[in-house]
Image 1 (cartoon, one colour):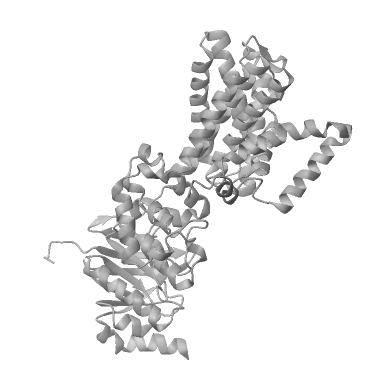
Image 2 (cartoon, chains in turn brown, green; image 1 turned 120 degrees about the vertical axis):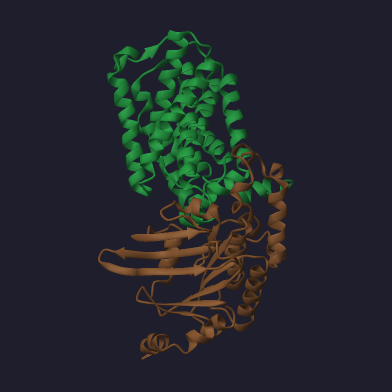
Length: 253
Length: 275
């Protein structure tokens, strides 16, 4: 990247308070194009709050969120999503009574005019269908396409949620503990999917508790504790940072 | 003549039920659709009797006007959920009724007449067109978006759907359909008074949807038929028929909460469609 290209995502001195409590204090971070960046820290450190501020679910008390250099702070959620930021949730949030296939269609509201979207599905933009097929195959969900998404096993539900998030070709993907509760093999599948998504040029910001998972995957790490950024750097640097060790060991003690 | 009267009642109730169904599909319960119906009834009658428009044109204009009012009502409704929204819409319906009660230019509490009677066939043309259009929309991407918003507004917003647009739009469409029901009601009975559009009317609409099936549009049809025909069949019970009807209703809700028709039943009845 040349010096003049703004990073994919930049948080500039973002603070979020609830009442008098500082959930996030003066947080600045960057996600470069095509990088996987990890956001780690003990419980209650403000990781999910960071996601909520980025996606517009919460409004930042101060500071700016920039996507490709354009401020998206205080835009409504759906505009931020359409600008290119998609996310998944720690507690999976799939739509009830909707098949896997329908999840991939509903995530592409931008691919047809209002009038066209009022017509029955078979008149939809062929590109919408094509894209849904492509994503279905990428995530290996072809066999369960007509199953109700919520009736699937946990690991598959996580995949459907990720698939829904990437269908609209976002610029930045926010993953909130994508391998929580998964066994080693399942986590490995998710890791490979993330690496392949990165190859495709997608930038990913990741919240994860599993340190081993993060260390082997991320290009850069940010460590939060009590809403404050206490360390950042390459995984190897962060691993030996005394402040990080203190935050994690302090919590374990 | 008697059956034609019942059929017309079913057609009008079907439209009223569909007006509730559209709004309910986005997760909002309106107990004030009789208000929109009243607006449609009075406005259509004014247009045909005073202005001299043909009935079809008058209905379309009244539907558009009511739709705009529906959108205006839809915005404050965004801030309310569940039972609070139900109460607010109930208040809206009563407000409209009492407005016409005091609106002497259209007869006030004495009512308004002078409309020309419309045939059962005409009423059913409208009912059928609206029902078919809604069923077609149910097979469209927009309907998926509506379902997503009803189910999880936050998640819907985060995949790029605009919940405000969808919920307010549904209110507008529901209000327009209710106005058509009102216009047809006025030209079927050729006399209207404010009490035709009271709270009980709104409840009838909601009942038809809940009885017939609140998850598919044809449910409104099944519900309208049941709501009009059942009390007739229960006539032999004389004064007890409404009690019997109430018992039937409770039984239905206990046994089949989603109402008579649902997607599974329709799929069973129409095996050709894979949907």
